[in-house]
Length: 243
Image (cartoon, rainbow, N blue to C red; front, side, top):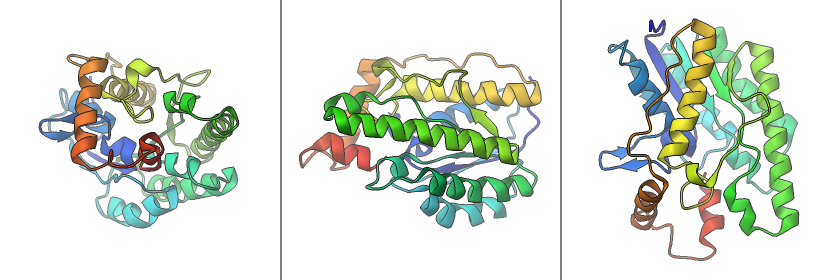
């Protein structure tokens, strides 16, 4: 496998930061797992993860884009939007424009840009009243449509599946929203598949060693407790709001 990139910058929110995939050494996450896989054949690949939890797409742009451009990446990932979806108001066109305002400057700089759609649903939505769950599923769908349009308009790669990708409880952490280790591996594989189509690199499977649902979700529960997220009810709503 020949990896054509040497400088990778990841932008986004808690998904890319690695929430849901805590290890003894700290958060891991899909972008870190992807880099570990790519470094097997390109050990000098440089990597910066700028993603931070709780940010909307506009906040991620305002806080991360300038720094990302300063790092002069030839590969960048932009996976953000869940906090827009879970916010009090969601406008697909505003989200699309905010996402494009990150993707376009990175593409104009010459970087290969990787973005991604959203799962069709979240396990946590099963806990909501039906009308609210239906609203959020509709928003997930609208956001995925927006991501595909931005990717098409600006020549970005898209982590996606032909009929959308499913997100099972076995790939979800105990909060019902963030991926667990298995889920992060799944997303890393979607990213690798997109990169392989672009650059002809080997889309070999990323290993899931030790990524059992019980062990990773229990670790995330302990992590949530140490972060002080479990002191007030309803806990699932607060955790989702910190996507």
